[in-house]
Image 1: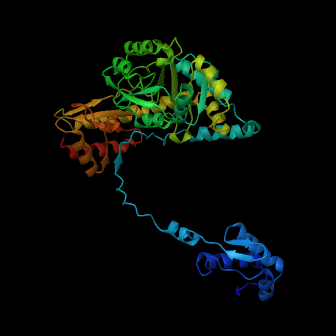
Image 2: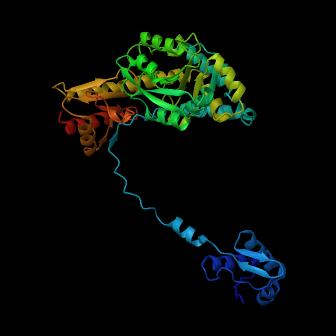
Image 3: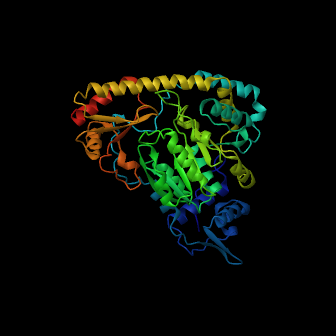
Length: 466
């Protein structure tokens, strides 16, 4: 007979105490599989509790699979494989992982932005206004393409600053450009072959392949992606960063853009995915107009995001669909709910409408230019022999650096040993190696406090023997 220590009033219900005790005995193996438990009548008499108390405990154990009830026979312990206690104990054991490498003192990764100068006070005020004035609208479902007021402001911004004439109806707002790129794969078709720049942003290829597309790399020259190689690739869709190639920094001239647009028009079903990821930050002259502004045939899908201009955590991006694709999108994909919360869309809409976005961009452009200039001055001061070659510094938030007589592996390894993490150009090539003479390191500098630039360059200069 089971002797179960029961506590009286004010504690755990009696049926639960019986249930927990029997479960613990089964999990510990002290009640073996096949063991017959006392009848409900016998156990309630032994424990001096009501029969309904024992019945409730047995029913719960049976429902969870610890017991099996046999008609006119009783309750029997079920075999557990593996025992739940063993699973819980295994889950509690610490995972054996290799020790993490110590964090570098300075990290020139390309994903950083300057969040110290985010307009928190303005954003907070607009947030309060939205909560007070638009509270009911915040609880309503958002249009699948995004809040109409936000799309109207994006269309205005694109017209005034990127040379894009698009109606708000052509704009689809989503949770970042990565999500929207995945949506574009569904829209254009997984069966197509997609071309990517080589070198290029590695995550783009992974997103395309993750969406089921076949991806082919296409090489570049001094004007950007080579259209002759694109033709030979057999691709029907190409992803490009024409305003500031990642990571080489190349700006595609209008002649090459026109050539690429002609390629798209040569056959039905060809499209260009234009990623305009950091075009707002050009330090020499005006920003380069987007390729979409040259597109008279409806073959360019334009992508941009607020991750670089405001904050990565905001996770708001948008794409501009040409009219023929817009009709397909609305027919086949409008059932998708908006992936950006209504509240954030309303706040961002006001931020754009009241001119804060343009003012913030102007301030950040000046700050990033000052930071870039500080880096370049420090490198020039510590390189009297002129061994450094720096490319792509006129726009964007990263630059490509090469050192005469030093290969990429030596640059990255010696920098890491000095406490500075830099990123080899080879990691951006699909084949994993850059062509001879094209080695170097990519330095993303947007996340650096200005006062640390000199310290980081000093460490690199020492590591590289400048």
